[in-house]
Image (cartoon, rainbow, N blue to C red):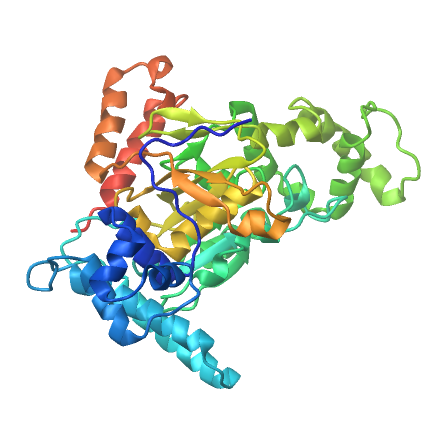
Length: 456
């Protein structure tokens, strides 16, 4: 399947960051490498090497490069120019530090110092009226990353049942997360099901969340998706099943859980049939296991249940469309703000970085942690298309994939207006495609959530 070409959208690819800053600014001005080289007294080949990351310009060349690419900008005339130059200088320092040999202790000290500098450089202008993703990570501290965990089969806990296993590839670009003044925590999505409500408030409700992966593979994504501004249109039957699975705390009894799984995974066998080789403890639990098997099989067999979460689409209220059916060489993914459902009125939010497949998830996360300024005109997130290089080897295909926005530019005010217009229409059946299935009870909390992101 040939992927559609996104209109009016410059493709992004993960080059070394100093070189990418040069290339993006040059492209935005419509200049050739030869033209830029002439302006800074260097050759076309030198500019190409800088953009490709083969050459890191010395400081006495970096500042003229910045000035050439920001014609007419000066702190007195353009207050954001010094902020942007600060970003360039931090990335330049980081690249120099990585190339420097030294002890582990020296490297750790440099990393800590650069994180602090990066956090200061990423702060938005004081006049910014909204808390938005272009201010990541500084505006989202403290931060907890919630990743999809592995699933044991047969399940050892109920967090292993009716959900896909996590993949380390989803976190490919997480090491690029820098600029945080506070330590970033990493937690398993199994916390959403296991343990007490107090434990979830303690582990997930006292910070902002960065949830990585889709509802097909991450329990936190299943909870947060329902209130995310950009979200998966998970069928109602799957949402009801998910709520039931989270409520079945009796499946914390491992013996009952494994017996139930034998009945569910019996290749179409009648759950009323007597399983062979049962222990005395399993025989005691057999009647309840049969009841639960009949209840859950009403939703479908385990494979059918999983397909309801994985074979879905992404609803985009700005593009006003549903993105679905990615092709062999491309994927759709999204980055979206949402409330933190485990917090109690303390202003903490969630960020969902998720793709329909692993390559989409990885690059959704990469877009956020590598260059948050890409969200300047899509402040609460959006949908991206990730294109692989199909003729490269596997590692290169994944790492060097290109992505582009499918969500048009928007403002917080324009997004609120879209939701209010849909709400005023008054007919759930006539919602636009990007809000298909959303009721009034779904729209009002989204409007209220956006308004909570406005700075006083």
